[in-house]
Length: 302
Image (cartoon, rainbow, N blue to C red; front, side, top):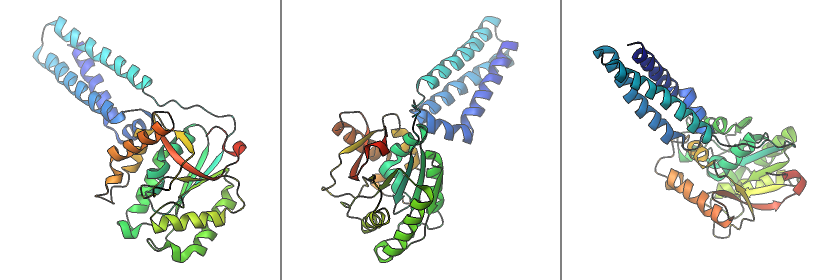
């Protein structure tokens, strides 16, 4: 009976850990295929818990209860090995960089360069975000900024500021945006700035692109990321390998549940774009950028 009790307690402990909110968030950020692995763990340990309880209550033959208890221990070891194998590898860099990402709406950074931002954070760089509007025209103004902060925290950004410039009318407040971006650049001193492309049919994205270029007119390294609304003229020549970070990007995008019914926010579309740019870069998955100008020593091994 004792082995069955131990097996049941171990099953409960594993299930409680895997189903906890903190563990779920941590695993989604650090383990490839965390959702599928979590479902497998829950299914296996639910069965093992039932079997161990059955052995303990029904007083089955000692060999049966011992075998099930051993299976529980072996499953724990096996899942531990799988988790270690599927952990996202991160290579720490010698020279830390500062990266500032500037977007128009609360979901822009995650959609455009979420994988790159997460990878930079894991490599030891400091990344901050700046969002120009609360996105009130595209969803609930009371929800979207909080979703942006959740997404930024999930990716590991050290800070995110969401301004309240008017959504869909950012071109009318270009001077105010320039001052806000200038202030962020002067305060943070980024080595690299990410922002929207000029080749974007969303008027807010284009307005933020122009404002960023004005605010960072003396900066040496500006990369334009790819939003879902870029035109056919978007012509990237810088690619960042995000293999291993596609799941992280998907989870960050899913932080924005308010703008429902947008096909470009589905996991399938996010994965498809990463694979498409990966093929262009002769890799598996990638995110694409247009350089306005780029100093090699500033970007290092981004």
